[in-house]
Image (cartoon, rainbow, N blue to C red; front, side, top):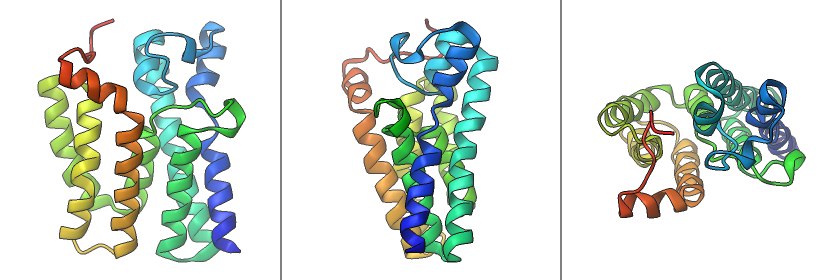
Length: 195
C-alpha cells in the first residue's frame, strides 16, 4: 500500500502543469496553443522569455524532488523513491488536471535524477550540456542525457532499481520526443535562439 500511495502522490504532483499556470498568469494564454504546443520550459522560453522559463524549469524539477521525498517518507526504500519519481514524470507528461496534455518531462526527470542518482546524473548532464552548447538543440541534448544515464547508473554501482527507473525514463523521453526525432533526422529541429 505505501508503494501505491507513492505512485499516486507522485502522479498528482507531476500533474501540476507550471508552464500552463505561468502562461495563464503572465500572458493569459494556454501555452499548449502556442509555439511548439508543448507544456514545458523550452516552449515557455520561446513564447514567454527567460524569466518565465526559469520559473517553470525550477518548479517542474521540484515536482520530481518532492515526489521522490514522498516515496522515501512513505516507504523508506529505493524502490519507493524510484516509483514516486517515475510517476511524477508520468503525471507531467499526461497530467490529470489538464486533459492529459502535458510536456516531455525533462525538467521533472532532472529533479528525480538529482534526488536519487546524483553522480550518474552529473556525468550524463555534463555530456548533454556540452552537446547543447555545440548544437543549441534542446531535444537532442535531452535524449543524449537520458540515453547515457542508465549506463552511468550501472557503471557507478547504483542500486539496480535505479537502472530500471532510468531506463523507463529514457523510454518515456524517446516516446514523447518522437516528433523531435523525426525533425532531427530531417535536419529541421529548432535551435535555441530561433523563434
